[in-house]
Image: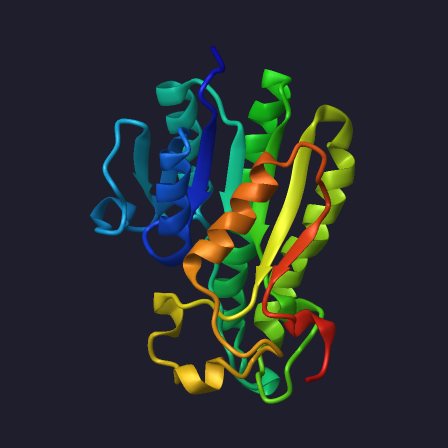
Length: 241
């Protein structure tokens, strides 16, 4: 009998994160879901294969509790989805160092704290594993009038480190990939005009959560794919339209 695999999902209380948690549970995974108030989320389907850990991903103690929960309750860590992230748009000259520290704490420090814990465990298990992180096409393909430079500084860091980790741990069977969604219909955009958002890709429209979930699940389970950026953005990364 094949052992059940365990996946950790960050930013799990709503939107893409909640969609990922429910999808992995339905596929038979054990899931450890974390966000600041994930235990209060009404978007997650209850399951005896689901463990919830509240905490700020920018705090290293949260990463330790998440990893310990996975190992103590389910016995392994086989996959990680770094979905937690924050995004601020404003002209570059208006960003403050408080903005930068906030972005860095969640987008970069949170990535480092938990991914280190996960890779250490995967190395000790000697059975490989998957790490998938959520980035954005805006890293490499800015859109005029959509000013997000310092946010992209942090998201671009995730893209860069993912490719380097993919090479560093390829011989250990640990695969590291990213999914770069365009605009997705989540609570993040609840106050933005949908007609404007729909113009931000050449294939006019907005992605739904399931499309991003499908991309993440594919990369999590693709045994020979590593160092990949999977764009789910209606072609926005292709250039001008």
